[in-house]
Length: 181
Image 1 (cartoon, rainbow, N blue to C red):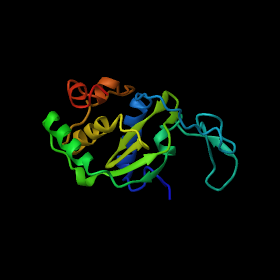
Image 2: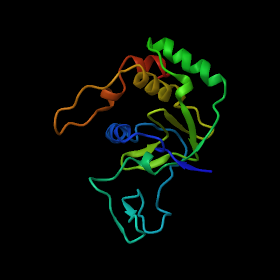
Image 3: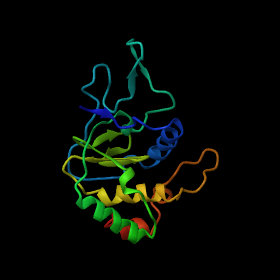
Image 4: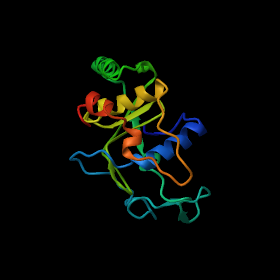
């Protein structure tokens, strides 16, 4: 059974995740082909429209396109026990304490196609989603989770500003603790 990746999020967490995801969406790269929404009835490539909740005609999304992860169809998984050891290695490298047992692991069948390119993995709150059978970004997403759980937050934004890659991927941690991913 597939579930939408954002189930179980508070409204605050969802809004914060949307803001952050817009800034970093599409930063991950690998060799697999992305999922697009072109096959959906009435939705052009990139999912720039959504069906009306009452089943009416498609209409534009408010305030621009949503991050592709909001449209992700994911399947929960039981993480291999070896991931716990890797998580603790990333914690030790970062000098921060996370909460491995709080993670809800899931997979998607292929990368997501969004307005800034494909997304190969993402973290939203306690949900970590990877492409099935691809752990390229496992340490990277673990570090995002560890930073969030330990209380790290990116700098505050001024009105009209957007997060940069550097804001959301503090160095040297992402270079040292994720294998450069």
